[in-house]
Length: 392
Image 1 (cartoon, rainbow, N blue to C red):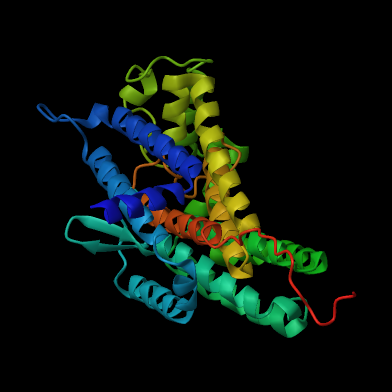
Image 2: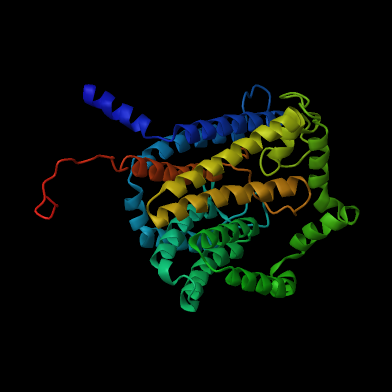
């Protein structure tokens, strides 16, 4: 019993308690807002919606998985990168063949359906990609700016991005791109390659517009410029803006939002959860939500800076970039600065797959924190050591 207590005490002492408190606070806030946003859909006698129930289960299971993964040496996980990469590619190929699209996202066949459960494979592949790309960057660390290394790194990135695009999940593909850019930057890729990539992207944009984007995707971009000409495409964002603006500084009150409780904003529990936060908790609540997300990313970057392994550093940066990019894209959608592309707000949007996979990535960060902390060298001093080479 004493040994168990000792091990538990050590486990707790080596856990990043600040990051744990931050993710718990974000998860509780997120569950509360999803519950509020889905109250309007409750049937008689129903206390809690399916979306809120799934999110609670995903958060609880995710936190348990985070703690379990944190107890596993991250070096063991990172060494499995070839297997992880192979499984990720296989998952995406299976999704291409058997993938389905839920009613809320008819444009994207990015889910595998198991009975009544939908599993979005790209969410898990994001975590696998961070691991494989971090290891790839470590292997070519000394030659990263050589053309062959840049080419191979590009091929590595194109494989998951291309597979995700083929399933119709353009939002996730954009997140993969942001993760790639961030990891390459922190790995020391010369700025000239980023400039060349930007020029190529601009040059290819007309071709992407004509041959990659579907009509509905083009309309979503055009709706930002002329919402009156695209009422169907702009409806969600316009109502979302009205919802956000109606909250004022402190909001209308939890469970009291006119738009949220009236179900006026489509997907207010999912991609547009930020509008529910703004309406019911106001600008103050939005600041708290964004503050939690900011400090979660900040703590991950700090953990990466203190890691001794280059791949561990990049893994922390990659997961932080994943969260940060999703926040920027999601808020951009809600503010009608970016088109609607189906990206969830981490910790806040409803979705079992995204929540669960997010915690898996966080578990890796916790492991990096734990095993770098527990192996720190102990400062000591030796004195009165005799040597035949010492001066007399």
